[in-house]
Length: 318
Image (cartoon, rainbow, N blue to C red; front, side):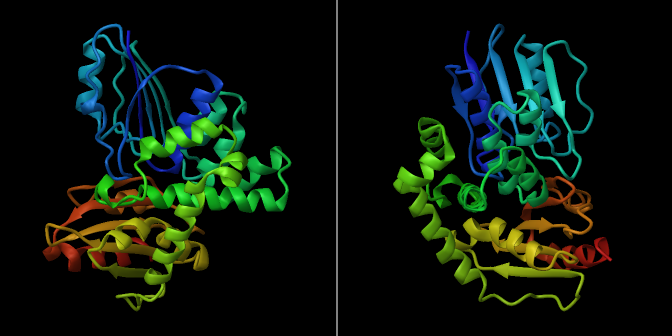
């Protein structure tokens, strides 16, 4: 029997798996990728008797592969907070799905484990920009302010590393980052001893400094659109830059676009922090869009659809 751990390469996916494997060590095959690389179940060659844990990837985007695995007799444990569509009713599927805007996959795993690895749920929540939820979890652990600041920086670094159109854009491949974090087991040990932490921090700050020089394309107070160039630094930073903008102007929605190799754009959307809904519905209006209510994206927006996107974006967040 083979077990497969299939997880989003962002902070939420990585920290969700860390919680599970630190609580119960399991030899597994890792299947992951850059943040937007979410159609991961189709890469799993599992057969009857094998098992799969899927974390932080939309069941809607993986529906056909999910059904095929279940039909082959594969048992699947699924944790996610993105739009799921209609889940199959199958005895081989154990689904933990909650699309509420105040939760992330790491919080769902924390509930499942009754808080036994909660420090990594704190990192997951900060990584998904769920600041209030992260602080509530941190308070239950009685973390000092300096410790909270440290794990928030770690979360930002892990989240930053996941963005890119492919793993070639990333500072470190998500599977390697997961394994490094797992070896350290404790986030504070990783922060204090791993050279990779400083490497990610330096790169994130440099990329953010470049992004902050870009002016918004829209003048609407309620909806700001930023267009970054087709460059690895821009693709890496679009998520954390979007979070920074959302935290600085919580009443406004924000979209960060980067050029792609097809001549169009990759889009990252943040709903207003004060009303964190509507991002996924907006993005699903476009062919490769999806996500969750508070934060969503479009993998490939053709250049000729940019004006339509900007109109829809401003109208979606009045």
